[in-house]
Length: 132
Image (cartoon, rainbow, N blue to C red):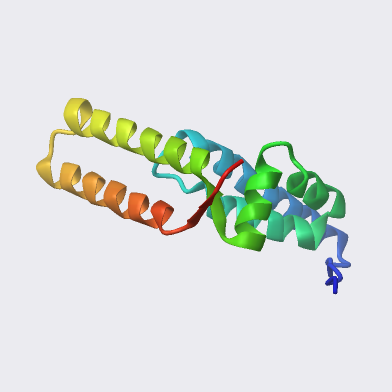
């Protein structure tokens, strides 16, 4: 049973939603590099905005060589690949520890960053794994 995608009929609304989807996608891609910027919520937001504004952009995102598999596994199976988990957690801890050791001077900020890293690690590990 397939659901019909209901798009806005207003052309201005479509352009605004598509633009917001592209901004969200850019933030998602930045989130791959920057550990405190979440990737998944921005990707999901992009998919939702594209669904409402542009079938072409939605299909492109869902069938993207890298992001499409990630999105489909997350949406349909609530899983994250083991490789993605290892990469995300490794990059998170490398950048957080580098910041805490070499950049941040205030102890309170160091503690907050470490607490965030622990919380994000627990959140990532809470998802089921699958092999690619």
